[in-house]
Length: 400
Image 1: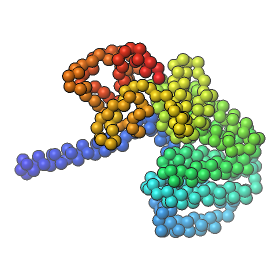
Image 2 (image 1 turned 135 degrees about the vertical axis):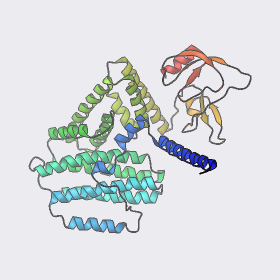
Image 3 (image 1 turned 135 degrees about the horizontal axis):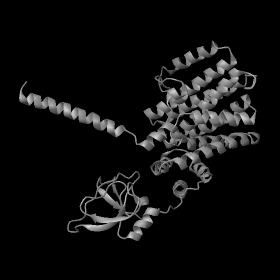
Image 4 (image 1 turned 30 degrees about the vertical axis):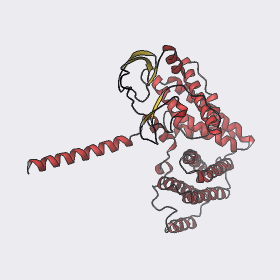
């Protein structure tokens, strides 16, 4: 082999390897993103079903429903029929998720969502035919445990999907989530009418569910949403489960390192769900630790800002110069505060104007949470760095 051929082979392998490395690196999620995905991005295996291949937008989808119909006809036991309907609902929810990943066509998303809604209704109708309670039949109790586990996962995924669909399909997903909660509480209370057992089951099932170190917060959201739907006589059972999980969350937060408490703040920024509901939960988390108390207050303030943004109310912005790529020009631009930046802000480096030389500035960043002074020259901005003319401005910025 000639030297030029060897060089070509080497360069080909090098750049191929580099491309693969960069592609993998780009896809790696941060620890906080991984935590959010653990708690919200429900997978088919979590629901005991396989990845859907044939979707509702296929002209051959009727074959899938035909096979389901045969399975249902050949199943006679009412509990087994309810389990089968639950399996079909799991499959159809995964089909909705796959359709959302595949296309932003609102009509296709609505069609898949309608399929799911109809299946959830069929679970309720089938459960009406079960004459025994969980206390009377171990098979009924086993079905109920599995039902509660899977329906809490449905609720988490449906909340996530609300943030991923186009605006034309949002109302349909929201409608499906509201209807799902109604059926969830109806089936649960049909099969278990002892309040203490409802509390016990919710506690145990949610505690054993896989998730991140912050999973209690998402579990509290699910319970709060469920509490809103149950009749008055069942609310106390849900509230008692909420109290237990709130205590666990509070205890876990207090044991966390400062780094993990910071991650919780970022986690709260990234999770889906109703912000007013999340603020209601945050208000119930107390702490004797001054550091944790300060972090919790910052989380609450950020949630309040998001609520105001959603309502179109003015939001107070930190007066910190921010550098982002201007989408209209593709160049690095300077913005006077966080509210005026493009969303999302693609951070960029800036170079001081010729002739300005170096400058002594006060600063802090994500790794150094205290104000200090040093000389900045040339290219110096990076993600998380904040610089100020005076120490007072820096300390004010640090408190926000």
